[in-house]
Each structure stands twice: as C-alpha cells, then as structure tokens.
Image: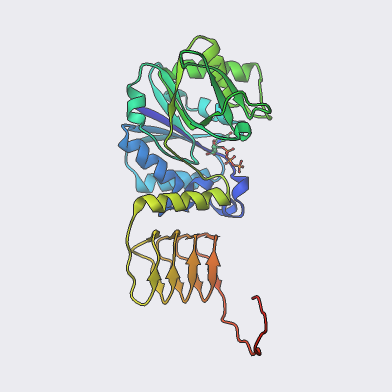
Length: 324
Ligand code: UTP
C-alpha cells in the first residue's frame, strides 16, 4: 500500500530548533518524529512512501536514505502553498488505487490496518473540546462525512481531523486538488486538504471516519514535550546508571553517558550526549550534546549543544530568604 507524508513546512513555531533541522527530525521519545511515523506505517502494511520535502528537505532525504531501505520517493514542494498543494505533487501516488496520507509532524496510534480493509475512504478523527484550531467534520445520519470546515469560527462539530487520511482512490483526490488549485480556492492563504476533501465529498465519494486512539502533536515546544512524556510512558524502559538516580520513564541512548546526575522523570537523552552533575526533568537532549552542572526542567536541547552551569556559593545568616 502506498502512503504520502508531507514534510515540507518551515516549522516556524519550533524555532530556534527548526533554524537548523527540519521539524520532522527533532528527537522525541528516543527517535526523530518522522521515524515514529515511518515505523508505524511500515508495520501497518505500507511499503511505498512519497515524502513531500521542501524546507531543509535534503536533511530529510539523507536521513531516510541512510536509515531505511523500503521503497520511497521524494517530491520537492518549492513553495509552501498548503497541504493540498503538497499532496498533489505526489502524482504517481495518486492513481486509481488506495493511498494513505499522514502529516509528517503527527505521531499516531490507531488501528489503520482495519481502516485499509474498509469499504470506504476514511478520515482519522478525535473529539476535542475546542475545535476552532483544527479542521472539523460534520457527519450525516449514516455516519458519512458531509461538511468539512478548516478552523471553524463557530464549530458545529467537535470531531476534529488529526492528519490521517485514507483514500480508496487516490486519483479522485488528485482531481479534487486540481479543481481546488484551478479555482484558486484558498483558505487562510493556502490550498487546504480539508477543502480538497470537501470537493471530493461533493463529487459523491463516500467518506467515513475512524477514531485515532493516540494523537501526539509535535507542532510546538509544549506539545513536543507532552508527546515525549506520553511516548516514554508507553515505552516503559528501565535504566540503571551507577552513581546516578534514574527516575522513570526516561530514554537514555546506549551511546549516551550519564554521570553523577538525576535524570527524569520524562527525559530523553539521545545518542552520544554526556550529562554530568545535572538534574534533568521533563526534557529532551539531542545527539552529542554536553550538559553539566545544571538543574533543568521543561527544556529542549538540540544536537551538539554545550550547556554548562556552575554551583553557587552563599554566606547567609539564619531566617534569610533567598530565591536563586
Ligand atoms: P503545519 O502548518 O502544521 O507545519 O503543517 P509547519 O508549516 O511545518 O509548521 P509552522 O506552522 O510553520 O510552525 C503540518 C504538516 O504538513 C506539512 C508540514 O511540513 C507539516 O509536516 N506541510 C504543510 C507541507 O508539507 N506543505 C505545506 O504547504 C503545508
């Protein structure tokens, strides 16, 4: 089964990290966001993936080429014109056959194998309290989608699109995207996949929804950290490091070094990093970084960074109050 993963975006909300690497290569729960998505897709029966790359796309291509050997292809989105435009570039993947689409920054947990066996096209959804930041789906009495709205001001449904789309026939989606672009129909200045899907529904395609059990957004620093927490919780790995206290759940790469430190809970330390005389809580440290003599929480540290603090010295009398 074929899949398309759009990963061309700039990731502005994740600056400064995305000034150096593309969002999808940020490490969360021990491996890059993109690897979580690829691994899940491969274990669910996907064997051929189109990656839509743009911003820092050569790094994504290099990463996939040096870590995977399944069938894949890269399409360059030269201008970030929206998801529908991005997906439409993968022409060879939008033929008269099923295709699965998953956003490059959406780690998910869902039984997509069953979805692939279904009779209809189907969109991954979750119920959220405030759907105004998302695309929403309104269903008819038979459970088929009839109206999709991108970031509704006055939402009529709290069923939200989470970035997983299964189409029974990729060609019909391609035709809908072509129509959207020909009509130059933009929402918030972009060709939206939500609008292309609405055209597809209006043309008579029957589209159902499926529930996405786990939806781990990676669009902002806070959501990267909460996704890291949830992934670590699921991994349930135990680490012992002599001379340090490890408070699970954590991920410590076998090629990382921890000395005289307190690590966790909810901390990821990637390959080759050294953590020394440090307390590190609810944080992510990328590859080959050095963190020493500091007390950090809720932090995201990239690759090859050097963070070093110092111990303070005080000479204070009884009843003093000092906040450092
Ligand atoms: P987002 O709009 O959430 O991601 O798109 P972004 O643009 O990278 O991040 P911000 O908003 O600037 O912080 C969701 C996914 O769709 C891809 C993005 O790469 C991301 O994986 N995308 C979006 C494209 O590939 N092309 C587009 O034109 C738009």
